[in-house]
Length: 234
Image 1: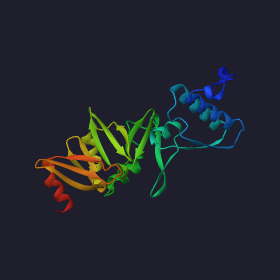
Image 2: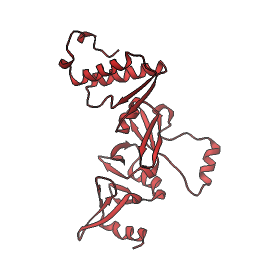
Image 3: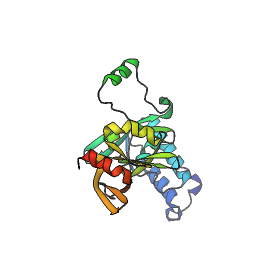
Image 4: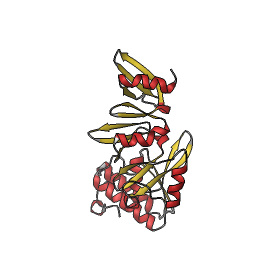
């Protein structure tokens, strides 16, 4: 199952790191457990081993085994499963993940009645889609720290990770403005709830510093400074 048959006469210490990861999985499934807890099963291993481990996990799921994968990166997690949970300071919450075929042009399908209800609401609650391989991950606007446009592609920055989005920066701003997002630069949209400081570097140079661990700095155009002051009441 783990593709090590040809290595059966080799010593373990002669195996590569990736092969040792596969052997580690083999030792676990050898006992036919009903529950498996795997920590970073595909981290830092070669492509062949990634494919094999994903295939083994899929087979175990078909056998109705329960598998808990602990992972630091959302993108890696949704490659393994569509049931992904994020552990934050606020607790454990499920992240909405859809197969690409379940979506129509990146939009969540709604009934006519639901569509009418949405149109009559004073506040809309929209998910923002990002594509990871053949899956679509749906983010709450409040999760997004900022959006950056690079080489014509919009990138969502969420909890230190970056996800490409099919919407243009203008389209995203139209969707996100009501949630407190500000077009601070021609290439950036920022969630003002995530901003900790406004810094003046020179007479014509300004930055917004976020309240994340990296103290991420985002450029603020000179022409946007007065607009920002009006928004925050200065």
